[in-house]
Length: 443
Image (cartoon, helix red, strand yellow):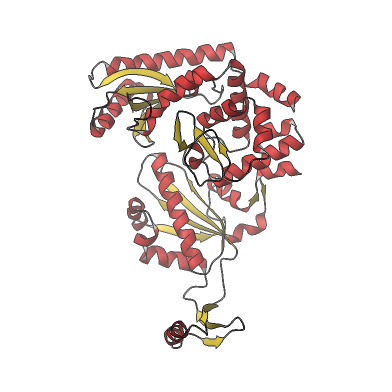
């Protein structure tokens, strides 16, 4: 394992030329923002944050985070308004746009490098007013705590996570963030130790120190806030993938784990795919991703209630105008009848009520060998596409987040299979009917 990690270590350190170029871009962006903050007495200072400030950035994946620190008595309304104005005015020549976390922030690109202008309050540790208030403390803590060797171990971990498709804190990914990567290396000291520890990790195991109880698959404590569980933002799917590939890498270390492994598509299942497509009015990628993920989860539940077995589901969007809700079903067509179990016959009131309620409309009703009263019911829908169409026409308020309802009212399409999907959407949909690339390491 040591030889493999050593080889990768040499490839992840940015070259002197890359470092110089990134530093020039960072200083240019900083001076542009610095010029604008002088107009506002509400702002105390600026500082760099994120992986650039901590020296854990990857050559091909290095954002520049600039934090605007506001006086703590500034209202939330002013905090948002002024920070957006500073971001847009300072980066106006670089096509700035709004992104969202708890609060909006401004992002732009300078020479293919993302610049994030993020507001936070100038508060004492633990006196958080916004989610970003911890970030300057994260930066100071990691700059002090990570050794030069550990910074490079972070880079190896980030590369491992990225090439296995589980890196990134954005809502679309729900993976391991750059900061979580730093926390993990700080805890386990090296990438090798991390792999060995994660491969044998227990359910609900706590990484870090806290007195608080958390209910997630694993718990990763923020070292500057012991009440914060960083793992709460990571999906179970991505936690599972890290555990599995850590086991596989520990058993058989090789460079293949640092290469993207393509999923293996089972084309015979395309006709089990139900697709809901609609156009939406432009909004921040973070917002639309959150909304369509909630809609997909709700509609999965409704399909199950309608008798359709949902094996997997996911959301997809081009982040400009089109959104897709995708459902991999056991079958898109089901029987027109189903059995409904009632109470046991010893429960007098319940059985009488169940029989009286179902006797009129049930196809059949009988006493089962399990001592329960059984009724045979007829379904309203046996076709998943028709079921979904009717549900979205009649029950929008029950199934769709409020801000998406107006988008759906303007129109949507329901289809089965991949005939009407563009190439990029087809690739996204194919994940539902594929053997995950990370699992192919077990071959």
